[in-house]
Image (cartoon, rainbow, N blue to C red; front, side, top):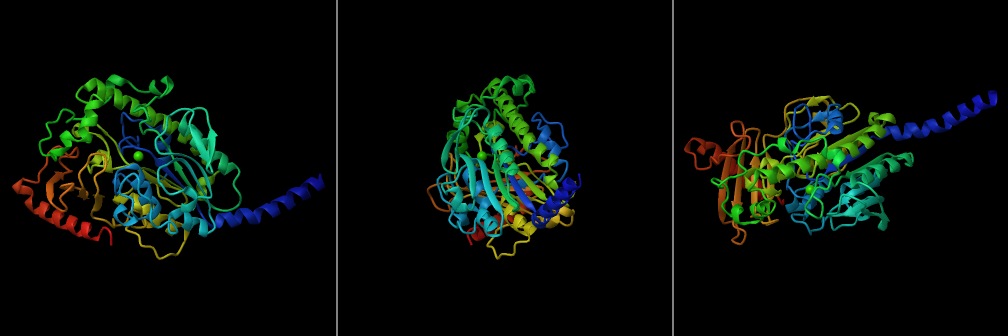
Length: 456
Ligand SMILES: [Ca+2]
């Protein structure tokens, strides 16, 4: 008995210094949800897109309802997160470009500061994970299927059975179970609710049973004549692909909304497995969990599908943070995906001179304070998925979008102005409205200044 007691004492004594060492630095998990619209998170509201697990997590931390990406599409969004910079500076403005500055990628900074680094799930950059600082990777590249996916574990094929996001999350939990005493930085990427490679959301009946297809909401302007919107949208992919999906018929739209909601729910349930582990192990006492979407997704709003464009359904994403001393609150700050980079360095106490086009949210995570931003800047400078080059300024109450000809450099194609307070769905373009001329002039000026500064 005395022997056992002494052994216990000795083991505790040996274990304690290691535990306190890892407690010095906080851990970080970025959970990036693929193609999740800002309203596909059931936080504090009744929505068709129920996500009980994410809602439970969001209610424990700071939720940012006004959160946006700098460019709404997979690869540029991931590059923006890992660089803290806009695509026009970091080099990634389309699907095939490489992140230029690998040594200063977030993974490398964390690794060089003593963090165990790992990435899980969807990887959508031409750069290799280890070159961006991830020591361990369990990934698939780009677009895949929902079931029985072949992952790459540190570059070697590893076949799996079951739902892709269950595998991603289970591997994350497995990694955490086997971790050493270093603090960790994990980049966890879901695939759902992105469409799979067959342009479908093949979710099983159990998840679909949570949703009523007939009750799926229809957007107000699904049958639009494009009045007030850039005319090219009608003949290019954003609308033409929507027609291929059958978005000229309410039943087809409802079918897509229903399947998207079920896929979003399946992702949510997978995340619940990580949430349970973090809670059971009390890891959230010293771990910041940052959850956001990489871009939104149109489901017939303005007669469109897909993303890239600067309307709310596309550029606005879910975003919340929980962890040590993070206040339970809804923040007024307008935030961007590029803010993760300086925020994580700030919270980790890493001193580094960075060329970041973003702000640290450390203060916003502990108290309301005065918002730092009065607008966010959005850029889609090169044609992607049938869009023309365009930029936007979004304030709390207004949005200005300027579009240029794709082949005639800097030749204005169209301007849009939306009064978000009275027209949150961006149905009525006020750019030609004389009563809004002053706001238009002001936002136009802000946009030009931001465009000039964007790659500086
Ligand atoms: Ca995406």
